[in-house]
Length: 151
Image 1 (cartoon, helix red, strand yellow):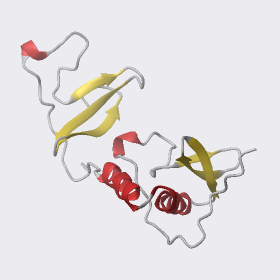
Image 2 (spheres, one colour):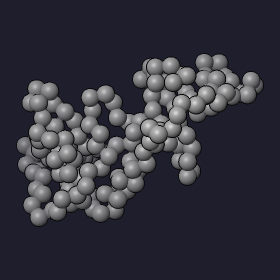
Image 3 (cartoon, one colour):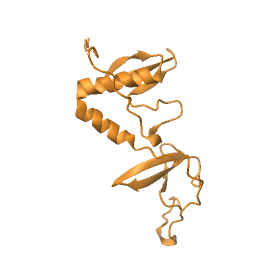
Image 4 (cartoon, one colour):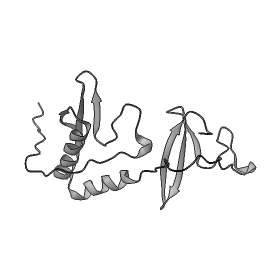
């Protein structure tokens, strides 16, 4: 029997760690470390410690679960890991105030069989969706997943 218990006594509240925009699936949490359990009608926070998934708790509120997940990362993985998790997931591409633009077509000779004819667009076979990415600050940034390549 595994008697490991997550104890957050004395750990100050931490701001939640948002997921990257492109990693949020429909019905999933917008925060890292959370899942929603329909059978309990609650959010569950869990963390991987030494290769094992550890349950932090079940919560009515997604935000409350996310705060405790961030507290657990701070306590069990340290400030450095907490900062790294925030940095990895903090770059969110917000296009809400940008009017729709025409797609940027690739040069004729650069289009491979089965590939998109647009720059920054590829088909994800696993998800069966088109995805858009952009390269910023030396990293590929996920913009989103779409039903068709024109979106």
